[in-house]
Image (tube, rainbow, N blue to C red; front, side, top):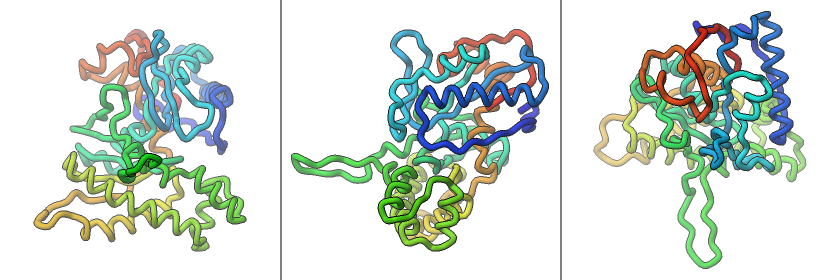
Length: 316
């Protein structure tokens, strides 16, 4: 995107559970391709934004932030931004997918008219991002809003194991469940077709997940009292609409009596690319935002940055 936030080049690849090395190679190749296709001089590229699902935390040996997407086998404490930055010789800024999508919604969607909102992100799992007074709230380690790690219930007994609620939204597990029942599904397009055909396994998965989502939306409502709660992500649009309808239908029955107001539960309007659009704006904040706390910090997510040489094109 350019400094006005206009998308100049776009590419999309469907891939299932890549290893860190595979993902890094794809990211580097895609970034180089986008720059080449735009025909922009490399010294005018401001930076690269990367969105990741799951946990991140500071590395112990000055290696920036490391990521551990729990839904991806083989990913543990991967210094993704540092390694990609070495590949590309460009600043690489890292953000949680859900927070990135919230930023994208703020810049490109319904959030342009809403100062404080919570974004519920349905992608390969469940996440959340919080915008307060127009700016993302990331928390101390960048993991604020991670709804998926809340406990689904409190288990008791010597052999009991607490389950995280995000497991009920895990799309790879849904694919596995479908294959076990004899249905081969591997992509979002496959899911959309099964949903349109009223496939019983898909509908049952959605009904269970929507029950948990209703409780989570109420939790967000009571904890943050936002102007709105927004639902979006990378699931097929019709499935997101199905979740929105189920939760909207069930919310009133679960609210505490006497509560006379509630934030609207809205569909995101920035589209499936909201997270990519959000991370594409990170270098804009890093290099050009007027807020002192943005200008003077030592690199978002621990990556070194500078304010020399204003440059124009950003990739995500």
